[in-house]
Structures are given as C-alpha cells and as structure tokens.
Image (cartoon, rainbow, N blue to C red; front, side, top):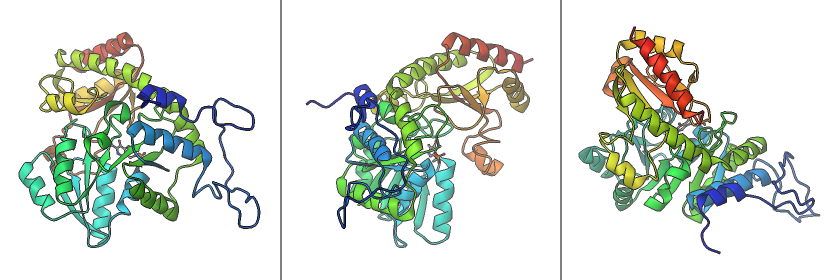
Length: 385
Ligand SMILES: *Cc1c(COP(=O)(O)O)cnc(C)c1O
C-alpha cells in the first residue's frame, strides 16, 4: 500500500488490534508485569518498564508520523533529552544552540559541569561560530527551531549536512511544530524528539516525551538505555497521548488559522511595538520557514508598548488567555518569559538574548477566532490607558 498521509496515520494508529473482543480502539494495558507462556517461553512483553503494549502503539504512531524507524516514549520531554545524552561519553563533545529550551540548556550545562561530556554553546545562525564548533569534531549536534520565545529559525538541512561532514549525529527538538508542520528526519536529521506535553497530546493533561530515530540500530541503542535508566513513559499517559494524537492534524489546521489571524491583528495594533512570528513577511527567516516547514506554526511573541505596567494590565484584562507557562493545548495561553520561562537567566543575559520585560508570548488556542481577537483587542486597548 502507498505511504499514508499524516491525518490517516494519526487517526488510525493502533485501531482494530484487539484480537480478544474486537474493540476498535486499542485497550489500555496497565499491568506492570506479564506471565510467561511457560518455562523460558517469553511473550512479546514481560515487564512494563521494558515494554508495554499501549506505549508501543503510541511509539509506533509517532515513528510513523516522523517517518523514522524506532519511536521511544519517555516520561517527560526532559527525559527524552536526557535519553539522547546517553549517547555521549566523557571524551565526546555536544553542540547546542544558545537559545534552546531552558530545561535542555540547564541539563546540558550541568552535566557538562560534572564532566560527563564537553559542551559547546553556539548561535547556529552565526556561520563562523558554527564552523568553529564543528571543527571540534562533536559527537552530537542539537537543533531547535523555531526557538523560544523569539521564534528564530535555523536551517535544519544545511546544519545537518555540515554536522554530518564533521562526523556528528543530529538531533532536532520538534516540539514547537509537531510532525504535522515539520519533519526533521526528511531534512536529514538522525533523531527527532518532542515534549508530547505540548501539541502532540494537545490537551494539557499529560507530561511526556518521545524520541524517534531514522535508523533502526540507533533506535535500539536508545531503547536499551531508556529501559536501563528507567525513563519510559507510563501506559496511562501513552493512552491519553495516543487519544490526543488522533486530532493533531485537524487541531494544527485550526491553530494555524487562528495564529495567522492573531499575528495580523497584533501587527496593526497601536499597543504593539514588535511581533515575532515566522508567518510575517518581515520575519528575518520568513523564506526559510516557507521552505522548511509545512506552515508557519502557532507560537508567537510580541513587545507591548508601556513596559511592565502595560503587561500587567494586559494579563489582568484578558479573559480567554490563561496566564500560564507551557503551550500547545487547545486553550489559549499567555506567558511572560522574563519572569516565567526565562526567570533562571540573569536580567543582563535576558537582554542579550532579546528577552525584555515588555515581551509576552502567546500559545494561540482553537477557541473561536472572533472571540480571541475581541479579547485581545479590549485588553490591549486597556493596557495603554
Ligand atoms: C516543554 C519543552 C521541553 C521539555 O518537555 P517537558 O515535557 O516539559 O519535560 C523541551 N523542549 C521544548 C521545546 C519544550 O517546549
């Protein structure tokens, strides 16, 4: 049969696999352990840390969506990153982007400080700095695009080709776009990973992660480590995430329509000084976004006029945007990077990174767009009074 389209894979993952009752939806398998058939006669599953039918179904679904060989479901997005770190020995070097997810930055810097590997932090859009980093012959290059919270992009195919020439493996954090909007393995990457907490589950009721490898052998090595260090995802979370996954393609469609409309609205609003969104023609990597992504994505940030006072009023007046970190759920969220997601950074470092106190980040949900715009409009107007 021909390659299935993304929406078909997402909806049909694991269907009709219940041999016993013919249940259309795969059952949830909560058992921690599995009986052997007899002395030294194993079944497919023996112990749920190592393997679980519900988790396996979810893992296969994501592997299919990313067009990879092996999917490994982890307990959180951070444990997906930690799993990838298992590929690094003390003499190895890893290159990470200067503006990667704060939790990933913290993990890499602290493990490097303890001597578990060498770390090079680089702006991957700085060709000279990247070439210098690759000249250290790293074992692994981490890519994250678009970045948080300023939505900067890097060119996955180009950096991957350069990294491969230097002998490195490439792992891409695809959390912000999901496999619906970007497929890094098809751009040459060896590993793609997600915090499934975000778009893949999509309902803000699971914390989870997944790692997908292009090659079977690398996937088996990582699956071995996932069991060894005990970071595989739970059956219940896998069940929920598989349920969320069914509507991922249709959710992303509506998220995208709403996000485009919000960006256009913000650009013309007097209270807004600057909008960071790859879908805007003046975004520095608008052309790259068109080429590398299937659409522009849903996340955006903007600078409000009037400083912290305006930010406070905006948050107080908004009714449809909940003030909370995280992203990717069906509900709209708003956050303040400098006091929330990036509070761990010194203020000077925040300013170097382009994160001012006037910057707010939106995760645009799938509520009715007329209601979203009306809410933003009244709150932005109030913020300037
Ligand atoms: C949330 C997030 C993570 C970490 O995932 P958790 O599920 O919170 O552990 C990693 N990368 C990105 C880009 C994220 O947004």
